[in-house]
Length: 168
Image: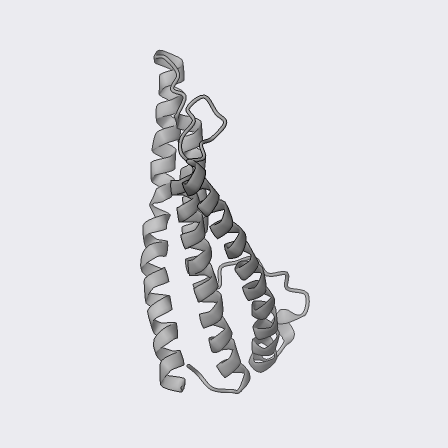
């Protein structure tokens, strides 16, 4: 069982590291779109697609990078007592909170899949003047939530072993 958990954690960590490092560069794509938007509004005819494209890139950046951020322990944590606890106590508290995060992510994924199915079935488009199809960004959204869920499960296993005084 321990070998299976270790393999799961290793695969999830490696995959999320690659996706997260790719996602880091989406900020530059978003900046390029916004720069083009500013230049086109100043010197040419304004484009109708730039703002929404930048929003979609930001969603992809945020959701695809979430699991990597969790892996690096870079999320914001309110530290009133946490830093004074022993590593085992921290691991127990982290394991409990990760279970709540897993529940939240499962509910979020169920809603995201439902919304994506709707977008695919009815060819949903945005209500903007550009009116792009919503299914691609909703697929990215579901993929990012799934990666975050897998990383949360991997983190739970790491915390569980740390609470027992072992390393995974």
